[in-house]
Length: 466
Image 1 (tube, rainbow, N blue to C red):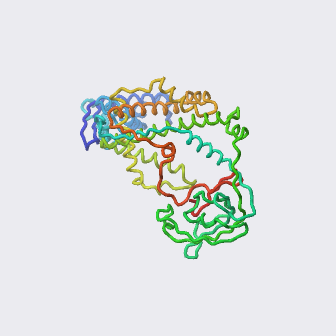
Image 2 (cartoon, rainbow, N blue to C red; image 1 turned 90 degrees about the vertical axis):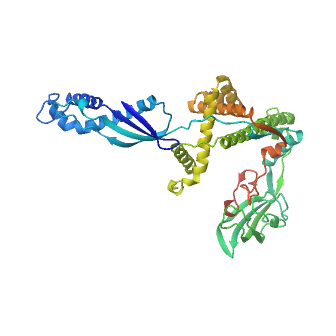
Image 3 (tube, helix red, strand yellow; image 1 turned 60 degrees about the vertical axis):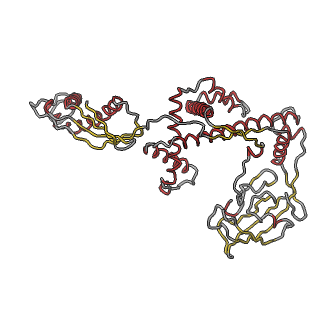
């Protein structure tokens, strides 16, 4: 087998492989002999068909099968021989079949079988990371006030609403019908019936809830508001609207008393408030550690991408684009057409992901990092600690090879993060627990929750489903 490789770009390669005619003909002859042992052709007994007849009948099909098999095998051998790190599947570009050997002709005198394959290779580089990668490391202390706020939040989740015969005030829940109009025409997504809404929850667009203060059951009211300029439904953004509202009920919120019964309802068997506080603090610390770890790792990974602007194989980018498409299609309604999604929508993010994967992989290879059993076990135990039966979760991970590989990948990412941090410029930044867990976001016109009906049911009722 003769192999030659030429570059067609930074990562593109064209490889030509030539196989001796002897290899092709011997493989064809062997296959024809096998067929001849069982061939059934009219006029001949099974297994007694003359070789010339078998060749005439089956050679074209056999030769095609043999050539396909030889291409697959020789291509693997050639890639291994040339120490090529193949990225994606090779494409057979051209095939120059050797002519069949005529009777009495020596196979050595017949030109060999040649084909050309085009493919991409992985880039060869040394991953760069140094003090130019800047990382801000959050430092957070959980205070008693943070625990108090969390307990208050838990109580808020158990809020009960009882109907009252008075005008609505802030923090009351109103049960309403509403229909939205723009230029006196109702718009799609701007109506709901018997929707529960807590006044002051900021579940609706700005100004909507404030104008419900003072309404009473049975009252009808028109509300004038404007959609924010950055509203997610572009056809509504910045437009003035009127909502005709009918009030069915006004309900007063009642927070449950922090007593033994309530504490036990949160899974604290002894019913003691101090036990609840200790459990809450433990959960807060675990979630905080995860949030800090995630933020630091995100900065490190962004820094690695910026510090290593390597060219990436288009084959890998294409695979990542399809993977992202499939993930998005899984979130869309049944019957959605993937052809509606242009590859360009995913290209930039896919290039970034592929580049990061290559850089992280190179750091792992160069530093000979491994996901040792102790680190993997520690990671799984940390994840399992938030469940009621941690051992059951641990056993589940170790019983699922794919989940275990995912954990091993996380452990390796952590090792890479630590290695980069040892060279990066790290600055500590004090933050509050609240800011750490709920970082400021761009103002949204509406939330996802309009409150709960009798503390049990949530609703997503707001214009355009916002």
